[in-house]
Length: 347
Image (tube, rainbow, N blue to C red; front, side):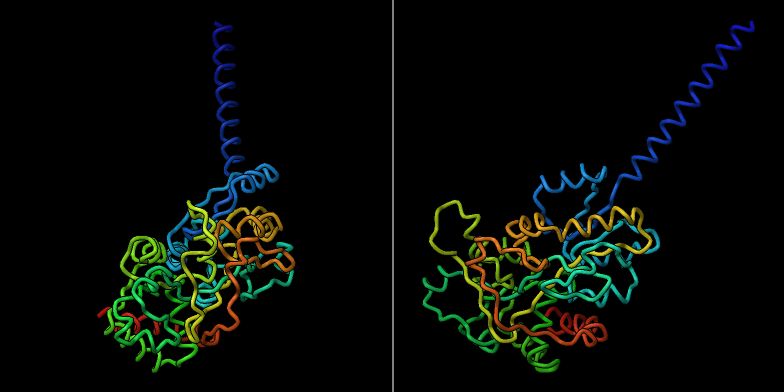
């Protein structure tokens, strides 16, 4: 009988130790998870991500939450119970909204103190930058004998009717950036007069960049030979072409009032976990290997000063001029501008 009781006690003790061990292992596993929220275009070479995990004993849980505008909305809606520890992809157009919502936290990462090639308001740490601008389908314009537009006003003329597709600024960061560039150049009232004329001229609106570029743009089988995209998009077209080309099949148009410099950044999420690992991830995104490797993955210029541009970027010269309202005006009026745009263009 005593032996039976002893065996029972040993079994119970072993079970308790096993349960405790599993609980500890579970806690340890949780502590080694870093939740990263990004927009859908986030792309870093997989070997670099794997090396980060190995070097830091961490498992990256990367959630791609749609366009940057959608991503930020999700971050704000989950503020009381944060869904991420670190967020990448909030740009200078969305930064005022993110700061006003109080969803970002300061990073102690080394990169936060280094001067970048393009600035963002703290606590965002710049990772990359690019230029939202118009792209055109070279073959379409050559085949149809239509001259390229030279001004924003040209786009409202009959010769360019139903040729342009843009993204909705309420759901798309490039769409919002393009709206801001028109306001920065024309002023608020004239800009919305311009947008009203675009609507009357058969403007096509897509939800986001992917739909606009890969569904509506004539280069990819759509009906519109003009699209809001990036100055680097032609270089990407050449880079990914299945046939060997001497030059890209598309080009970018740096029209006055149609160029916005977009700076994307990373920041810790307020109320998130794993702050030390999140800081390491911030430094990781500004490390030379990532800054080099991400160029031909996300097609943005490197924010880390001194990092060389990829060879493919010889087909992606930086525009010499860009425009935007002041950060103060964007913070104070951005939501109203989007609402006004919706009323002018969609209703």
